Length: 250
Image (cartoon, rainbow, N blue to C red; front, side):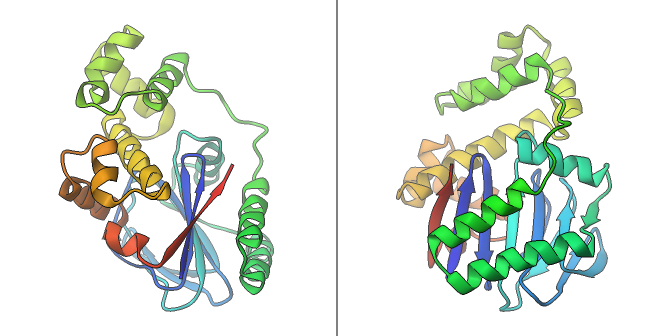
């Protein structure tokens, strides 16, 4: 059984069966083992550790190897994304110190023993709360406006064009694209694709099938959603949702 957890714009999973091809995406990804050490390849380097954070746009390959593990896919524009980026300091990955890893593993194992939705949600909240949010810098107001427009957008193609956001912020397309990348660490064009994928996942969380989720999110077709998901996660959307239970942390 896979437990897929939505925390705002961030997605998390508890699983012992995820197998992903080598891939990269514009999300920050944290991996945590329950007990055994993780064996993960990042940027062509093999790493053995208990917990690791992988930067955006960094190739990585991971297999659960039938052992329970926890992963976070963090949107860089969220508060959680902010603090995780600070840990990385623009490096491709960050291995958590043993003292932090032990605390996270202890909370994870407690959740696995309880094996209830409440226990898993409590575990996620404990992970989120361990990071320091006190020194976060606000984004430029024009970047915030773009993020707000995306949150409120109608899922039609014209509202997913950089020109639309350029007109709204009174910046040229090139200047807005540069500003967004400088502030968030990811290209605006890529973030728009990520936003559409998040909307599709939200629809699936709410019980819609993949076809309806794709259309709700503004993808041309279910195959377009499937292709985008495969490119970004290294897994098929069908395999992700098969035998999965969906939880939300508000």
